[in-house]
Length: 263
Image 1 (tube, rainbow, N blue to C red):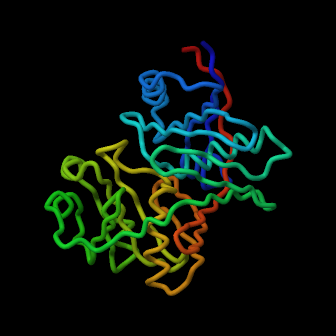
Image 2: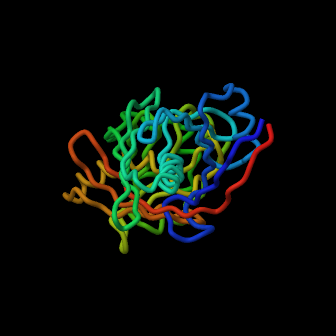
């Protein structure tokens, strides 16, 4: 069996920046164990498997190298980039995902891709788990939680940039991951994302976590449109817009690789 594969750098317009994701589009679902094996072999933070319904509707599933993921923003952006690149007359599509329902995606005139996601604003935790306190080198100012991750808020941008994480401690927080964040001098806010329990030590750019970060910072900064930067080694820029129970996240993408898998 031969499968077309594309690798896309998401949330960037520069090669070797942003977050790379693999995209495989099929007419029928592959077996789950085969999809997991392919994701493990790719060894990227996500591989998106997309089942085509028609030119404007698709089902989508996301796999890290170690497990299937409920929701992934950057791989959705990567999959959208591939679909738009191969359908010149289409500028709006809908993905259907089991855990999060329908996700509408639009390609804007400037080449940016805007994704409509559910608002997943976090809430303050009553008790900070020891795995979180022991898993970061800098003590949190505030800690919140949604269904994806613990949100660690720092007073200074320098803390976000310099904090060290200890994977064995953070793994104790499974199934939750950890995002650290603060206000920024250049952007509205910055973040870094650690997910040793579900994929790897640090994710380059994480679209899904901004469905919680953006609503939090929108309230703190009293503004609905925000510019975010995920300060990983590769780095990535995201434009976030809050509209009620939806968070619109926009970014650009660029093709790195097109190839064929023999499975």
